[in-house]
Image 1 (cartoon, helix red, strand yellow):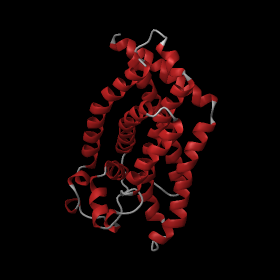
Image 2: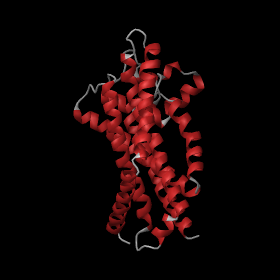
Image 3: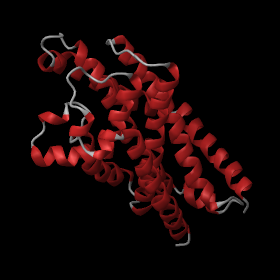
Length: 270
């Protein structure tokens, strides 16, 4: 199979996955409702308590980039869940019987989830605008912020693709992913400034890639709060958050693209 055949087959698989969402809109509705509720809950219930002087307005600007990061991280689990579901229902066996590139299945799955994340981020951005969030930089910088979030999500989707091939039960994929992703998204600068965390958690959060992509998005959106610590007082990762995010994403892709494809070939050869 040539690269062009793999890309062509991958686009067909991606189209199949997008049609599935179109025919079962509950998937998109309920997965976007969760981050919307997080925005409303944190912005209005906790925002006033955390940012008492500003009535929560400053916290809402701080919050939205963290919600974006959390949303794309949790959205990556959709890759593993979808693959595990396809294995359970015998769809992967059907793919195996077709004259198509084996790599196209995972490539199409991960690409369709990028498109899914685009839709989710649009919904989240509109919600953020409604609660007072504003982009205070140029259009180009804002687009780079969204692109960085999508690159980060794409790298994570390959990790979850590997997990989905290892664990052929959608429920187990969800539970196992939640146990890892939940602390990653909360022991970070997503919802609170890092200086509020105790020593060991602060050290972990400073090198947590979720903190880096959140920090990079905040900088590109112009949402760095007044009184934020100077860059030289934080880790190298948070001094160069965009670069650290890209390096981390490149390393994850270099490891998990071949690992996930190898696991897929082992799965279909059983």
